[in-house]
Length: 386
Image 1 (cartoon, rainbow, N blue to C red):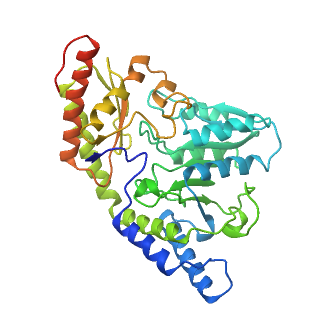
Image 2: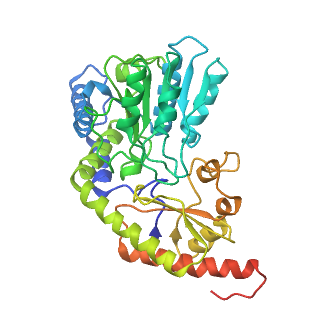
Image 3: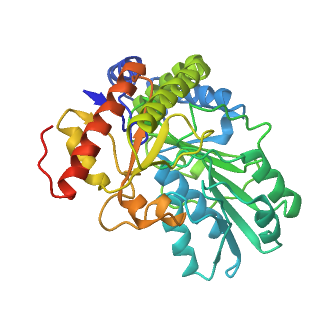
């Protein structure tokens, strides 16, 4: 089996899984309990928080555990807007993740106005348009660090500096779910007020994520009924998941740079082989996009059909974000970027990761070539044997 849908989720690392199992067996008391065992669990919880803070170069008290990136994004968007007067403005692009776009859309029912910042053909934010759009009514700006469908890496320091220069009170939130643990994020340098991140994107467990919220930020909670996570996210903490998440972060800290270079090699090998052997192919991910995400369009085929052909060989890729490929969801990122409908229909996403290598990248490319040609032949009315 070749699993190349790592942007959707990853296989939990053996050490992270072991940390989870050991925590379930050894640290099962409620961290809020007043007895000694509860205190031991609370200490372990704070140790995991410290590991997250050290990784991001921030303070432990600025780290909050959540159930994942979707909850984190919702909590910030709703929590910032709940503290403000109605009728103010929120900045975003039109290619954000559904967990950003949908909660922002809800705020329009409360009188907020959405301001869309222009992007180029690869989704990069137009810095001049960003500067022009910021004013004293801009209460919130939400942008994605690495796009989950095409891998575009935004210049987050430019974004933050531009916004804060025009309106220092604007709350800047960055969705870092696809960049956390893959690209270094230094929160001493980046002026974001909050960022979201998730465990299952970096070979940690599902159901655990987090928020960085800078000291001095005012966020109203979505839920009430407890003082956990300093009252922002009440409810008994999932200590085993948090400890497993911290273990995954330790692993990422040790291998990030070397793995990133290895992923660049795999990406280049895959793309070069496709371009050399498959006509009418478009690479939707730019050359300096995240090497973990490769989005391509193949003319005269349907991406969904190609995915089904590949899964017959136990090769797993996707047609886009797992959160936006259901029937009830809206258009794909490349469609929102204005690409031709044939390119939209023929698009697939290959997202590689820790467990992939050059040989697998080449196999994926070869199988795509075989099945794309087979699909084209079927569509043209010919017989096909694969």
